[in-house]
Length: 456
Image 1 (cartoon, rainbow, N blue to C red):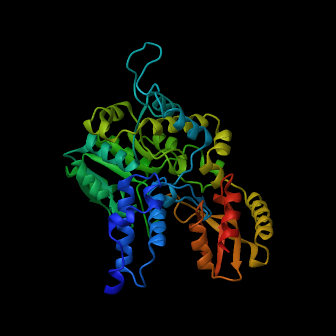
Image 2 (tube, rainbow, N blue to C red):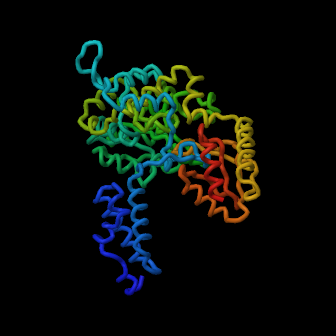
Image 3 (cartoon, helix red, strand yellow):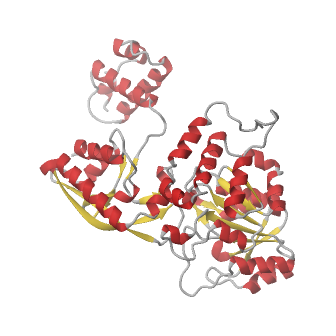
């Protein structure tokens, strides 16, 4: 904005004194901040200064946006089931209800039988023992915290042997070696990126460099080709031979046999990992388990007790809502068939192609009626993915509803969907906007159709 236009911008007090703002009922500080931001944006932009009424309305809109909730419900039409940017696992209805029920006073650390102090998370630990076969289990706020706590409690000041092929990095440039450094443990790299043998671990043990053996499931990438890795059962055998504990960072906590969900054979489950003999297994409460974000440590009593008694445990513990939602999710697993139906992640991953095709045809018919000649609507085949650092390289056949707008670009329609009252995250595919029905939840079709109709 040129100097002449800048001089036309009003002073802050004059702007805030306008009736539309003064009588809005909004907090004075909020209006002042909104006015400052609006004026700054005008100063940095081009064009002419708006009239006072238009400027006041712009400030009011900015202030009202600031009053909206910080997190907005969205429609996930991407086909990525565990979409990290959209909050990963949607909760089962039972978990949502449990979270809401814990919002007020609840028996978080209160024993109803005795009237004395109870054990925080005791019910969740009992469910995890029953479902996984672990001797004991504890819960923290996410899996990175679980790994950090396990290493701190079991290996601070000690060497930890880990294959170079398992030096993982998760989202946000968060690297396992960095977590290990913060724990006080010393990383002992063994093997090479693509081939690690039992002899590599033996050399670290016999040379006195390592006192704990760590295995990390490469849940967000695959190493293929000329490769070799030491299985968990082999590593447990080495641990027993040298008197060393074995820690397994499983990442995604699968509680059901993979065949029940149509997942590839060999996808490791928590129970299988514990049966292999790992002393402690760390995994996420969301991802393939389908509950709230949490980090779970399950294994032998001595290892879990060492974790639970460490001062860091209190700093990393989850809140009452997380525990309530996790408890409700785990209870669904007591009936595997019911869990598959009720837990959204499981139902989405196990959805049959015929079911998805029928849903896509029904949605396409509704969209054709809503859009008329403004948009060509078709059903095409496609592929979904698990996402969330789980099942890398595994594609799930799906059905897509594609939208080809006639009077605007696909990019403009996709942007309009994101700007809808209930924002929609969709795909841009071969010059069309694509909607993957696999990740649509009950109630999403109506919001999607409204967003498409208004966005054309």
